[in-house]
Length: 295
Image (tube, rainbow, N blue to C red; front, side, top):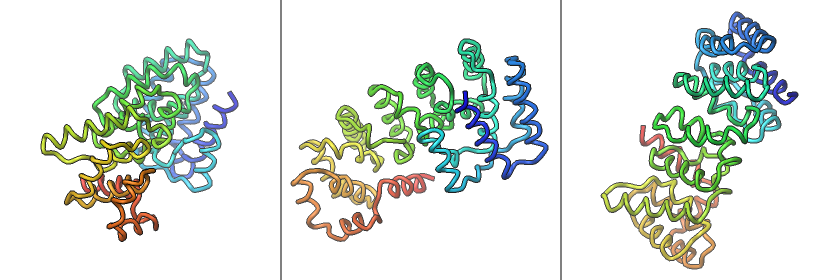
């Protein structure tokens, strides 16, 4: 319970920097009513009405506040939230947390909320009580084709890395590739790479090539710990392509491989290797550049 109060206080302090006084007063009165009465209809109404008082402007979060967020919940990134999400999360955390009653209310919100209400809920999975019990809901949410909701689960969210079984994790990452979402924003992507996912990624690339289509360059990040003859063949093809972004991704993957063959392939690419060593070619930059190019 103390952790939830600390989260409410922290999120409220973030909102207080930019929100209108009348909006903050409304939020304070609603959280008090929700906390003291525990009436679901009051909670649902406030959750919906929050859009009248808070906009979707990005949160203003300092480096110190980023550290405070990390101390409250490992991996929590409020800087990518907006004010409306934050206000709705405060309302959600204020609802009495008696398990059966809390789940009845939250499940109803998940099932009836609009796109932006669901975004707020899924993004806050790691802040909710009973996180292990929310796993089926999170896995089901990844089935959506709505980018806003999928991103709320998959990107900048510590929940999947901590709770998803390998099969569900792999499905989420593969769907991120299919939807061309930025892999560098998936938390703990490197730590949870696995051979099955590397094989899936390579097979997906071969399907794209067979259809005459390009491959998302970040995909090659997934194969580097499991380098074998097949993956080396893939990367050799990538670095010999005419797509500079793909070439950089292939070279970075080779650079990070523990393979003598990979080192041999890099010998003629001294300029790019130097750029990697100086931090000018990174997965984050490749991912961001690719997303910018898509837009």
